[in-house]
Image (cartoon, rainbow, N blue to C red; front, side, top):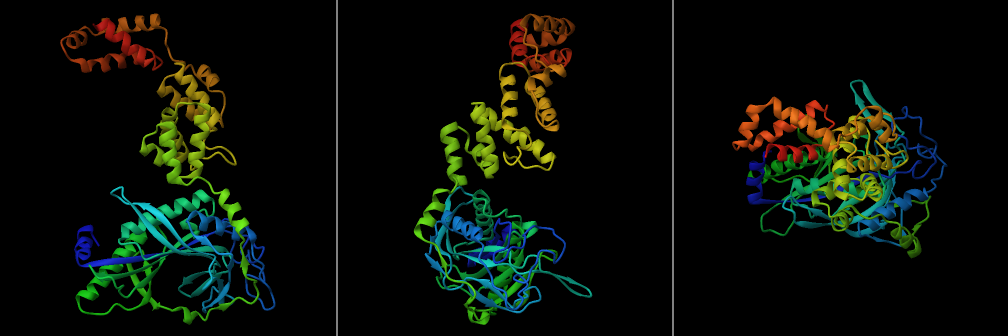
Length: 489
């Protein structure tokens, strides 16, 4: 649906959207057994009797998964309950060997939070968080022409499900919410949020109601949405489809639909289940999950500074433009890198320009992410700071500094001054030597000199270029400009 068509629909109907986000927790082992959670292992090699649901085996809760889930819940402003219960959610599918999923139902880990998002017009909107609960993942089914292949490696992978209130009113708001939620989870280091690897998945619930009416319409759920762009596409498709039904006087069916990104459509998958269809009952093999106030407060005290708070601090403490602060706080690793470099070279805007420019460019070219740990990439902040010191002292020009930075990245660091001297890149800042070169340029271009003195001030750049050419780019450009203006009068 095009934006203009969506606007026509929104003139008559208001979308009501809620999202259910499943995030894989960043643990080395599964939630109820010791099997690894490494992505990409050969099929059915990270399994055991527990995650395969063999008779007689007992689950043991992963304490690390619980701590990560509490971390996410607290950062989202939820109330973490002192007691929560695991339940069996029954459904039958080839990739669920037990015939049920261990999840949480009527007594989840946490409830009642919110997430503030910034809309395109720079206004803020708070989206309610209904609940955050723990559960295990199912396996992966691959459908082929001759049958279905099942890989059980993902069975038992720890997840949190984050359910929003139906507070979203457009596909764009849903996109912004997901982007903000992903950033928060990455900052917390709760999940790597890699959608390509299935670490972050989203189901969207959407209904329409006539503008001005408070009652909700009949909702549908759209599954298999594996990118932020597809979330927008799937919601726009479903809004258009439901609007068409309502305009024709037909009823919207309460159902689950499967998003087909190739065709750009959501196809009926099954009638929408209600809670009683899953035959929930308390998991008999697990005790209730107890989280006392001391544990919650201990985790709360270790929460990192959140992205928007950190961006505001970079603006207030370092005088950065809001745009710079937003870019630099896009990931926790990038923000940590920037602040480490500023501590070593106290020129915040200069460091910002280099980190956002050359450092990010070199990292992207090499398929790296800018980070401090476990090994600094693409270069250690100490090396970047030493390079910027040499540039500040006039020992090297900006263009040559970029060349030296690339060499340092390729060579894994090094002394920038040694590289400058070895490659003959040291900037010429001797006024006497530069005057000789400038006088030669002026003498060689009398027509341009006359035109400049006649009012064509733009020719100054021509003279600077000629001087840089004679000095093989090593002349100090600021000093060249100063002397040229004096000589040309």
